[in-house]
Each structure stands twice: as structure tokens, then as C-alpha cells.
Length: 115
Length: 112
Image (cartoon, rainbow over the protein chains, first blue to last red):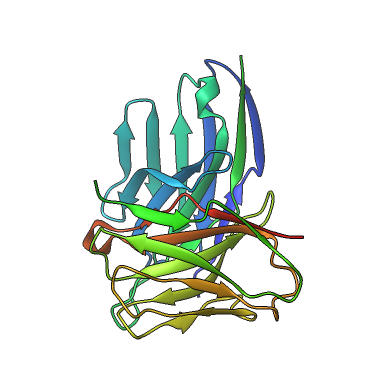
């Protein structure tokens, strides 16, 4: 089955710097890759996603890139702010089994942005 | 205002007790999921359901039970057989063609 690895597990940056979180996946047929942000004591929130027919997607300070050949995708946050501090999860969606979708999650990256 | 409601936000359980965590959604999503999250850890799938009256075990189903009598509701019971139930529990719904999940705000369960 699909396996998603996420690195680094923790990332500390200064306010204004860029942050990059990387994920690799094993199933080349996976076709959807969301990123979630989880603030302390809250549920994860979808912040950006990308489908397998697209190489890059941007939303203001956040971007995601996908390299299907290498089977990896990355989250890029520019001009980081203290409110970006959270745990970020990547995920991959393998081909549907009997019409049912089940995301496979990475282990999470704790991002700390220092003022 | 569509969304997922998990209740209660905090729950305390005595040893040997069963407790039920509520998850209600008005997003009209078919699929629903329960995840467990331990401090500093990732998400582990407990149970999931595609349609009413049907559900499947996830990776860590032992000591848990669920029901899906209505599309809107997917309650999780933590039984006394779950030896280490203290954790943060997250309910999610599947967004269908839009992809991915929508998560609730979670229930923090503590054994006292």
C-alpha cells in the first residue's frame, strides 16, 4: 500500500524566512496531495492541495510543488510569520478501492517561527 | 453554516468505563472517519464509514466501536478494552470529488 514519508520532523525559522517541508510517496498511481495545518488543540485544516496533473500551485505565501517522476511533493511558505507556527501534515490519495477514498498521511512537521 | 461538530471538547473517563464521542456533520458528505492523535504524533485511523450502516476497521480498531445509523452521525465508543485511551480524537468527513477531508475540532479524552 501507499506510504508517505515527511521531513523534517521539526523546523525552526526566523520571521520573514522561507520554510520548506518535503514529502515522498511510494504509489505512483496516487493522484491527490493535500497539506493540512494543525494549530495547538485544534483539528487539521486544509491549506492547499495539488492534483497529479499539475506541477505547482500557489496561494499567496503558500505554494506546493509536485514531482511525479521522483514521487515527491513539497510545501513552501514564504515570508513566514509567527502565526504560521503549527504542525503541518502532508497526505497522498492512492487509487480508490471500491469507490472509497482513504488518505495516507505523513508523520507531521512542527514549524516554529521566531519573531 | 456547514461543518463538523465534535462533542464534548474535553472528556474524562474513569478506569473500566465506556465513553462515547459524538461527531455530527451537515456537509452532506458520505464518508466519515475517526483518527487518534497522541501527543507529538501523527494521525492513526481507527474506523471509517462509506455509507449508512456500513463501516470498516482502520489500523488501530481494537478497543473501539462505532455505528453509522444516520448519514450525519458517526459516534465513537471507547470501551474498557482500550487500555491506553488518553489521546486527542479527530473526526473527519470525505470531501468526495473535491478531494481530501474536512476535520472536526477534536475531543481530548483523559483517563483519570
